[in-house]
Length: 413
Length: 103
Image (cartoon, rainbow over all chains, first blue to last red; front, side):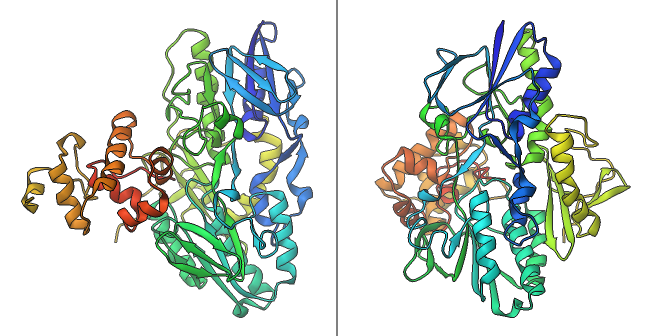
């Protein structure tokens, strides 16, 4: 009997467990999956919690509901991974030997990386919305808030779901408009990027939306500290942005166990081949999702598109065959723009977001890089697809590699 | 005395970054730094040498966090040495490709 150990039972780990349990003989392979939290979070739903659109009930289900019964599910915390001994030790002292290891430990927020972030204002007038706790407390705060300067700040890149800060601002504009107090709220986006988004073409489209909604952008803002006393955030080049309410997207880092095991880069992300998704340093380790350092978005759609490459390459390696460089960095993201509409963007390592229809060329139902109601309904419908199709690694109507059919580049003006 | 003309002997890409990092010399670094309004010191060279070493190993320029974690240069000092976008500016002066950064 040989062992495959999967670290992390979030989106990536759960899909890998389902697919491997389906594809491999249970007489030959024992599959073990480890996670410290028994709750599975539908993380895209966190965005809607501050505005009262979703509550905790919409975004939590037990992890075990999504794991096949043939998989050994261990609730425990990783102490250390030792590639030389090919084993993982948990904090309770139990040891899991492996023939293959799949790292799916995701990212975590590290607000403590920024001076003053966790000072007196933390969870009083400083909130995150990338955790259930932060999003829930922010909902309570917004409900009673009388208005003022709301600053959304991205601490440093990369972050999970890089469009979410913009979506937060668009939804905030809508929320305060509905409450009849938009004129009492100033919306400001302070980002370390040179523009509204990471890709120039989307930046141009999104910037005009920001202008329409009267959201001011402070670019190339690398936060040095939060001054809780005077309520300003200060950048390394000595710029200050004053806030009444600060919504932070703190530094994102890899799991502590990855860092403690010496398997991560300076942020704790695992150096990974961007095409084969094999660890750059250990041939029997594969990495899926946010835990990898590959230069694409840290997003659920990416995990979905990576799945087949990871599974096929584990099987190729088992059979002594060369690995296939099939992952192309494909990502797609719905971008909620408020007022019941959304954008959809689709891109990969080489190609900028394009205009066109998705997933069926020239038909849709979704329209790329345009703000439509269908895209918004797609985003809401995705919750059902996530719980019922994606986690169980059932086929969906989208292809892993990006298709150019029916797509046209945005004209450069 | 370094003449700015030294930059005419090498090729730059459309973003203004050196095409081939092996073409780089300290004189070229000074030429690019002069364009950026920077006079290079030993402290700049700690960053430049580290960035070139990482680029040779990985094919990508280091991030700000990578620089501050692996040298004795703090983020604050990095901003003083290479004002306005230190990672990008240091990469350009070190003769490296524009950092791929983050998506």
